[in-house]
Image (tube, rainbow, N blue to C red; front, side, top):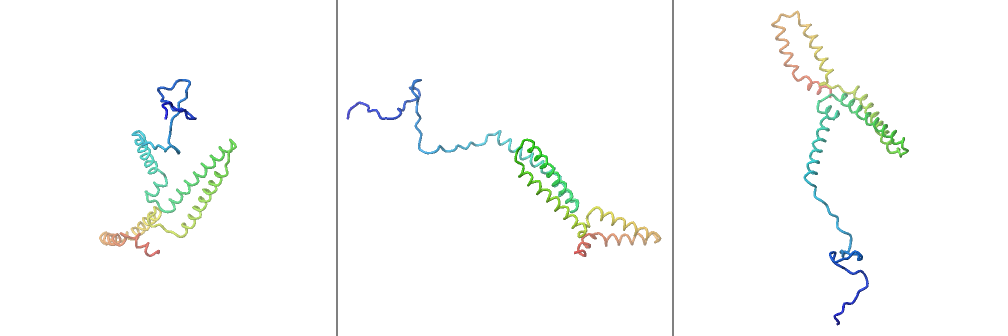
Amino acid sequence: MSDEKTEKPGAQIVPIHSATATERPTVKRGKGRPKKVVLKPSREDLEYHAEMAQERERFVDLDAVVQDCKDGKDTLERLRSLQLQMAREAAALQFTRLEQEKYGKETAQISTRRLNALKLVADIELEIKKLGTNVLDLHSEKVQKLFQLWIEFIKEAASPLPPEQSDLFFNRLENLMSDWEEKASEVLR
């Protein structure tokens, strides 16, 4: 073979440092699509996400529905709260739909979501009506007030008794009525 270089057709590979302004350097790459590089999150990214997780936790804890469940409100009050929250969401969807209509954008999906929210509001109302006639929550504030009223009637009826007998009667009544809610729940089942 001769020492002469044979020119191959195609681009000539020249190191970048030796490429002149007139020559266009080519970079040799492997076959196929380059691999996707996944960057690790930076310290700032991790701090931001941790802060957002804490913010989300605070927001969830302060939510009206979560508060109602934590406070141990009776079923009807909790359903009323749920109904109010659903109605607020339906109103927010209507606002969004009206804003989208101003710009001539498609609103069918928003309308469907609003209709579903309104149906849930109506379903909650029907459930409230059903519960109002079928459920007696013995731990509710209203029943507790009624119980206090009965105790006042009993005290008034026992007023002619001598103080020793009255005290003995109310001590015995207090012992018998200590877990009256549980006993009444068993009777109502």
